[in-house]
Image 1 (cartoon, rainbow, N blue to C red):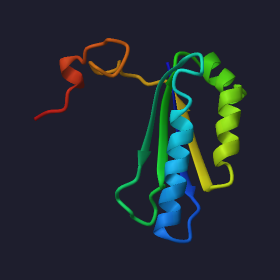
Image 2 (image 1 turned 90 degrees about the horizontal axis):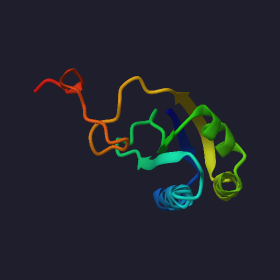
Image 3 (image 1 turned 180 degrees about the horizontal axis):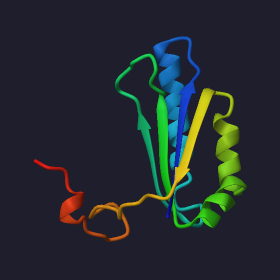
Image 4 (image 1 turned 90 degrees about the vertical axis):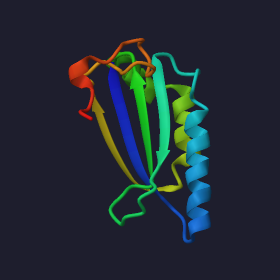
Length: 121
């Protein structure tokens, strides 16, 4: 599995304009669910901290393989979404990596967390 994380800052002269662009980005990426082979999980999060160095939006997506992530880059649905949101972003950051721990129960893959993977109470 490959995890693909992208963070953006979006345009907006006012809080309302920025929020509208965040929602546009969220809707566009959510529309990819079920349309891209090998895309296992897709989540869009919006920053709530409002600290000056935080990004506005994060996309966390899991792909079954590096080949699936590579194919996603040129998939027509992904290219459509890039076209929809390309003009609203001001900065973009990306990290792709192979997670080292199995998913927790309920997070896909049907795995159960091991005791040593659980945070201490």
